[in-house]
Image 1: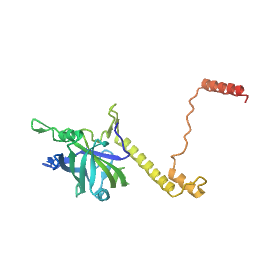
Image 2: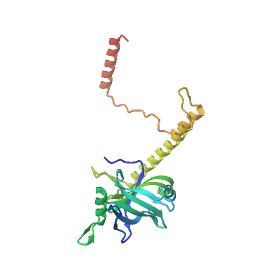
Image 3: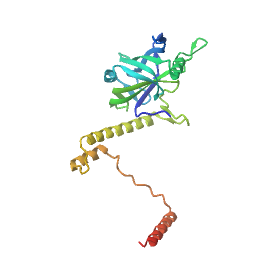
Image 4: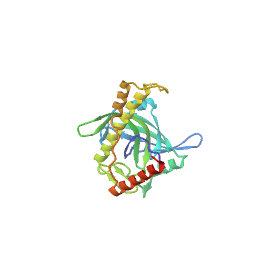
Length: 261
């Protein structure tokens, strides 16, 4: 079972620098598959309505010394290598090293270089990044401009898993498709929930906890404001028929009589 992290993903066919594929052998005999290319390109809108702006990766690169894990299909239990990243005028350029001592690494790298009759037939042909949106702005067309992201990993994927404008998510079992508008609505709802969770965390961290403690009216108001409508109870719809309601009432009356109530 793959672990789904609470992060955004941005998937696209990767652009590999010509001639960058190379197998390197280390001093201990271990083999590493190398490739270079763009993991993210600035200024183009994806099917989720996201645009990555120049400079979005600056802080995350500094914080991680430019080094990030390379995974298979965003699965943290299947790391297959590492990559270094740097921004240029076009996007996020990476130099990746695939660990060919792992079975999945060998399979992935082989799929990237696969040829049929001397022609390119790569079926591992997409890269996806896992990240958390830190700075974002929504324009009048509901496009989210990412001004800062915290990059957690990059993943190799097989072909045709990338989002497209007509169907941004495909459910594997049913083939059900989600429209771009629906995907954006889910994205916005998740962002709102994350903002509320962060606000509640700040309130929680600001007050010490003790057995005899009690929140002040001001602090209770802060909690209510941060929580918004998260805790508002929803009234259940009446679903009982008159016959069912009468039967339940009869059971209750019988129980009262038995207990002498």
